[in-house]
Image (cartoon, rainbow, N blue to C red; front, side):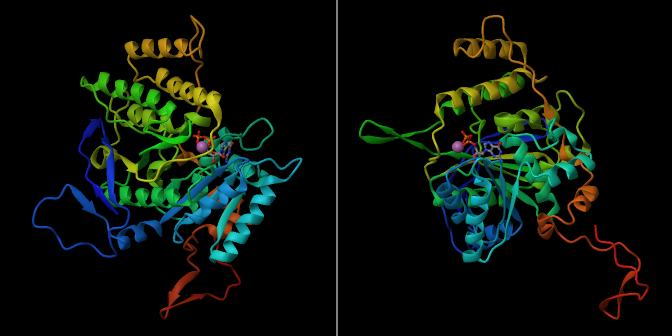
Length: 423
Ligand code: GDP
Ligand code: CO
């Protein structure tokens, strides 16, 4: 991939928000170019370099009742070297949609010689493991994981952590173009290749979203929800720094990837607020406005890359109500953030009232957030799932048992009959 270096950089405490970067070549060759003798505004990232990152990447596909063809198309677009987790919340009754998905994925695995981890969000074994590992927040009154895209993503993030991989990327299951999926993943890898910190977030900004208009296609530049979310997020940055900005272009980006070190540090909002809240949470927590910053993070920074895809983004149209829900969820998190100044809160209220989402004198309700996954006892979580099919994907833990020693260059176990304890 050949990609421009960011033209803009907005600092917000320890957060570095990079302006949108454009892709100049989807594939820029196998090996690194000869070094140029002049400074370049475009950076070459060789296939080899991206491949190494993808070997260390988990791709999570959250899905709920999407058309099977679409889910399959997404699978076809994912590079072989990535590990895939499908987290499904599809209905199991009256028709067991989940089992149909599983069959289709199994066939895909046979043809591609690949293993895909497929879980159902309501699997009781996963819920029990979460509860015992100290994360009951994700469970509802039935004792199963709550419904919602964000909730599925959290569960998958925890499983991804146990695979020992370094990066996690999310791809929605309702994408029409396998080629776009491949590009998004290459973009994730490009962002990670450019990072200088262990804490990095890469968000995709679509170049266009095609819509049918009359008898032709119209390539809209921005989604309806993104226009609003980005405007208010930029105001938040602008009011805080004192300089108006348009740096934020990916307020709603469903397609995004993080280093797992960062994913474990984040708090998460529920449902569709999850992506806008990423940025708000980073501003709240690492913006230096409310909290004193951890030394480690100040030194390393959090890098937020926004990269524009060349493929158009075409996914299932879910109607006007869905767009309004997304706008509401995004503005709700900005409204209730402790870093949002009064003047911006007033503007949000005006916007929501004029859209008819709030009545006069009404405020958006407060929302609850999920604490960072860092609080989960991973040892317990792993142990709880030791008999579960997902355990096959976990990175083996080096045995800590002193009875297991290196001996004559070979691994041997002292003959005591005690098995090395695997977590
Ligand atoms: P949009 O693309 O952001 O407008 O939202 P979508 O409705 O397309 O949802 C994004 C992705 O999340 C799709 O792949 C959905 O199938 C999936 N999704 C939605 N709700 C849930 C859920 O409760 N659990 C899981 N695991 N996935 C969900
Ligand atoms: Co969608």
